[in-house]
Picture 1 (cartoon, rainbow, N blue to C red):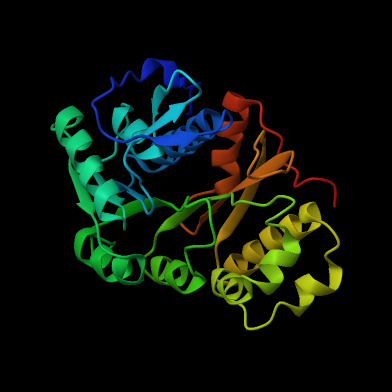
Picture 2: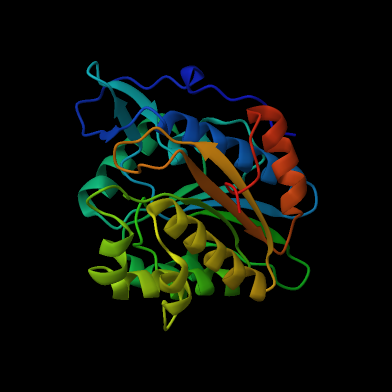
Length: 284
């Protein structure tokens, strides 16, 4: 069962290395992700031999907030800080500098944890994950929750399909820059091919036909993604959380949980109880 997490309990001191600047809503997002991970681990513990957490876009491990540069952990370091029955952590970061800093922070703070850090580019990450993440076979059972949180359309659906083939459950905050400048028209024109790769679509006609605003574009995008994963046999549950962002100028954002292994609805009940979360996707 998930509990109420506060990032205040995770204390990380300045170490002279880079931290990623964050907006005020990001600590709450990290807390919610921690709730999902806690509930997932609780639901599968005792039923499998290994519980594995993969962070596909782990960053350098720390965020800084405000003028005082207050530090708080990324989802990767927050997960390592929790007392959960997770037997293996696989943290992926394609940027060499961020990956190097992440390694230093993990080695300093979590020597007692079973952590693998992969610093290869995203196009090759699925092959690396096949080497480092055990999957269920024979009498051996594994449960893996993979967090995909790049704040962009960086992760193509083809990669998500590969993770699906490996039996991963997926946790995806649907967050990216969307505002007056980087609006739906920009993405449908300037970033058209990237958007198609992200959605795994050959055509965007269904979205283009109905979109008239950034909020509507966002809703259509999330629904299209949900439908793709549902067609692949995933259980799907989507929660809604408040956003107060200058980069993502929407009042709320979605987090999607996708799994064939656990009840996504049961996990979201845990998260809802802890976070008092609203689970309807805007007004349809």
